[in-house]
Image: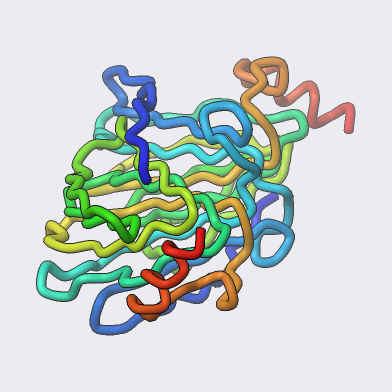
Length: 132
Length: 132
């Protein structure tokens, strides 16, 4: 359903550098990058799955809680370090909660934004996971 | 030498979303993404130019000051908003200063890391700009 991957940080007195390269430590071509900032603890996000998209999610600052659901079971993951990447395949319903005030989320995606790739209705998602 | 580009944020009650897509609002293929965090005001970074690399730099949180130099003149740019991207072509000497404690820098790059593409000696950089 998901995979937590360790990411190497280049750290020295100047700070931390996280390097992400397509088809190297990112297992797909990076076509889109998006960032979530100014998040609110009381405004969860997500509530969708993707038909095909692969994504790598990294919490660059602060922390937040993911609830992941493959239609059969749910798992909870806290992201709170830039050296941890959350690899999300398709067909995973994701919900994000409990953003810290300083939370900055970076997401690398394997394709362009395409509304047709989203499943935003949970019952439709469950039906799709049964067909697979 | 550089170009400041306006980037649209999708903002609502849940926060801000910045979407960057290759060959759309990013004028090159995104092969590498790197992030700078835990920066220190008294530890500047950069001090190099690139022979070929193109980069788009965005300050996702906090602020910092860039000093850019094409070998003929220097310019200073403050980055302090996720809706502003700094597009850096090749052959620009860049130095970064005055990072706020919460500064998070995101850089999209047109190619993989390649030490041979770096010019780390300022005199060599000046010589290279005269040849061009």
